[in-house]
Length: 526
Image (tube, rainbow, N blue to C red; front, side):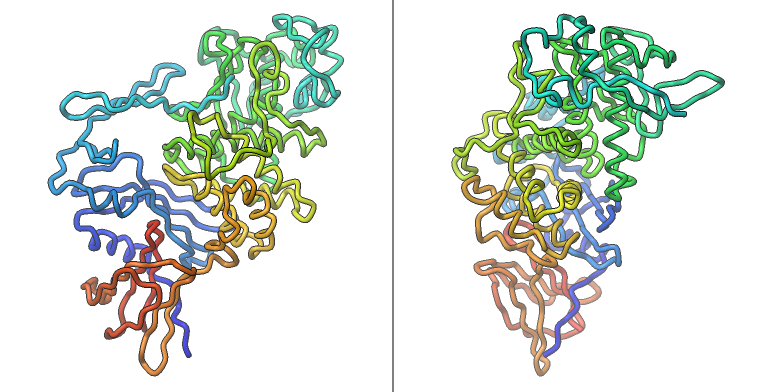
């Protein structure tokens, strides 16, 4: 019995996609390499008309062998593609395809996209910013905030008082060092990871006076120093995990922005992208939870650009930011059941939970907003990283690696399966049981039988015995559409609803097996 090697050239697999659905092609727009795999991300084009939102992803090992593919387009959507698209773009909306125009509005902190049918009907106005509700120099900072390290709650003498109360709150800060740039004897709040800018009202000059950087939190410089300190700390942690190229630019940050709103956001519509922090209630940039949460949007966008479409996919982005913020504190030995402990959880707004309430069940919840069920996903990630048998830094690597696999319209369950895939890639599947425990019952993000990504990312395969080839699926109940091509691309055989199938075809040839969920495996018949 001889096993056939499951590998094929990427370009060939892309051409097969077009032949399976005439006129449907992929055009690569982004490639990146993590410490464990290569990721090639492509957009779809149908009969020369770009398709909005949807993407195709090819994941390959560092040795070049393909691991798996993902697609946000499903077969039902493909089958509904119009015979004669007009464009200039195609957009799937309300279970049908529309020919649409796209206008982009970028003004200061605003980054909106208007999607309009060619008949002039506004189908969607999309806000593309990501929101939360809300030399070595010695500096004064909260780390991560004035309350949680000291087991305090907001109220009484521990209140903001419009940036006042320095006599109380300064005692809850620390002095530490940051590395910043010196140019012509002037010290600037910038380094390889961040540059503080005055981008948005209210307008305050950016400090170049290091003496003021360790003065009272009542000073306007305090928030400027806070963003440099915590963005730098988080980036250095990413580097320690091996993710040296994930955020490969110095992000621009305005710690006093948005006309004083009680809100913060990540805006990727500028070059480089920006973080903007409001001043309503407690200044957002005074709480590391807010800073790290917003930086989480930048990290997610860097790993899987332009993929934050769909309610559950966007909800995961918020949950990831919450996870990252709470992990940032736990690495420092500071635990909380909620995020935004200083900026929120007070008279200004409620903050958010990162603890499982014991009630929510993924199989029955309804998503009314992207913030409504973030706790279901963030609590599962934190339970996984806190498990006694899991190395928490390995858990962080698995979470980060999963970001590269994110696709438009991903569900919580699809993303959770990605954690299993990433664990297989990084540890050979050592943490499979802990992932299923954290994401499985009673949360039910994963079902107990979710094994499709377990151990080396099992794939369907071919066997050959006495010249007869047999295709075998890799999951009970999993069915495939199989198309067999000659090496020149001619279709030789086509099989539908296949689980196990003996193939009668000449060799050499290429076999393309497509699952119902769009996952594709390409096998060579030699």
